[in-house]
Length: 483
Image (cartoon, rainbow, N blue to C red):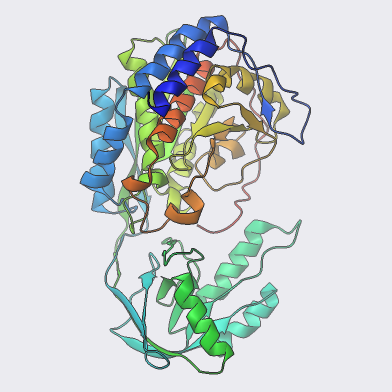
């Protein structure tokens, strides 16, 4: 029997036995196991778990990754993926399937990226151009200088002296406790945007010659200069040469192309209408865009497909949710939660009707639970909703607020109960996150299917429970840093 079959069997057995005992909502120093399955939920949730275990998730993810591939915001590949998602939603029985348009500043297309040492050992250096940074005018040469600073004032004082150099950007200062993070990062970006570096190089900070990726048309580190990520191993080589006084000289060529005009981008939406309280909505969300070094399997093909699979399973079983189940696949998460922000802005008047938002955006790891987001009033009801998934290992309500690094955040700022899944990271941060190995090969099947099951079962609890999760007071947007 496969590990997944064992999980499903255990779930079906435990659903009929004594459930996991409730935790202690007042204890902030531990992760909580919450609630007990409501008897009316047991049968439907067991059927959902079985349906997903033998469902379409892996096949759909393979199609998305291998047939379409990387889905950079503003690219034709993302448009292909959105058409694919629309077709899937219709095929799986969703209604009100549509795209919601917004404007994106401009596209960016990856080109060649090459670098090599011209002295010392003459080695080829592995680099990837930072998205939305300008290209070099053919190959350019320059001496490598290091930029590190402990304070923002020190950073600002060092930048002018590095004009015309190839700058390896090291550790940059972080805001002090209690300091306004939005203002701080705005000042930090302004300091870099005024820099006149020949090329800016950033350490990918990953082992195994992996290349990271970030960037946004809204600006970023070294935004007026050509910029690239360099492997940690090659960044360390340059640091050693500088430390020994060898004055490394490099040649760099970056050929990415910036679009000239704004482009139209889209969120993809589809739903199953509710019966008794159809105006009230549970949103399942993931971002369909990805970085383009790999094929966007774990960031965030897994999340997008998990949302589609939950809807498919509910419809395939003929289940009739009391509230409306809505899937939203966002654009532009990687450029600053742009799709989620656009959705919240466009649906401002409807936010009061949202029961909860569940976001899947941490790869193929098992869902261990959901964060409390610092709202004690949400804990017991969230615990009741997720209780049918306890037997699958989805048991924790973590006592912290997950900051603005995925699509729950714009909803949460408006007081909407919004939760990003707490997942086993597997090799997400150590390997696949924003790198060239974010591919289907790194998806762990049984773990991913458990995450699909846990998402669907928690959603079903939220759809069916008699109570509403109370909304909190709106908060000021204090996103922790730039995209």
